[in-house]
Image (cartoon, rainbow, N blue to C red; front, side, top):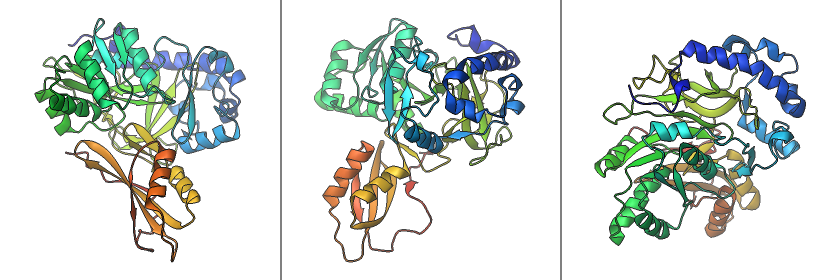
Length: 417
């Protein structure tokens, strides 16, 4: 049995669930006076009733699109964040746009457990290559690493050569970032003759860790594990290692979260093993989310992890239940594609194709011109970058050539490779 972050991870599953539902009514009673939107969603349900999964399933799922609409009508948090929990914290804006409060806990995203399960320990130095600009990713992992007792270099994104120089000088043992950016750093270091062999462990999220890429990292001496996290909920689940340092199957759900898998587009939980949308209830006082639909697909695996952690496991990220798509750690929403069309009246329809170029995510926006128009590809490309905060190519296609199937974003990445 592998070591664990604390004893909470190895308590009986029944005791964990009993503890969660014992806490939930008092937690909600404390939050409701300051969260009018949550109060409205529970208008016909008393917190005292929510003492089981079956009772919780009577609460409608709150999906991201609905949350975005509520935030637009009542900015910034739509009535879901208690003001008493925000003073002294940070406020983030993720693509969509969607707003998130940070919270005042030492490790508000509960990321320390994921670092520990990835083999990272107190005293290590972590090169954190998540963005610290506007979005919460950098701070989520930063707080978790420091709560574990690590030192953190806040590298952020971009500036590859400077990051290589910094890592070569600082000699960090661990990397945190998106799955593909570590390869970019290692490849660039090899080109520059820089030694990044100090990297022995990595915790990645914000994209798919393809088996071929994990194998390449292992061949280069880096043990890479992944966690599944969202801006609203923090680290939802994380991988663990077997005694030989290899990943155990699935991802273990984090503590103080209640995870369900529901049939996409409904509020109804599915049977264990069936693929559906990940829905989470969180005991985070800064953002008390009850049955928040993530839009991600996964499934509950049978049994418990061989590492000794007893919480339920999920298969990991298996795609999107809606068309919001994660590219390089950032979500792209169909509304953003619509915003591009609004800016360019000479474009009638558009479809964003997400693919791979080696280990990198790439985007191509296919646009149909208005009859007789000649759209400006460079101008549309600039709008794509400004609106999504990510670069991509623009491809002008013939009028009427895009399929009439309602799809605005198509993910063509192969997750089996």
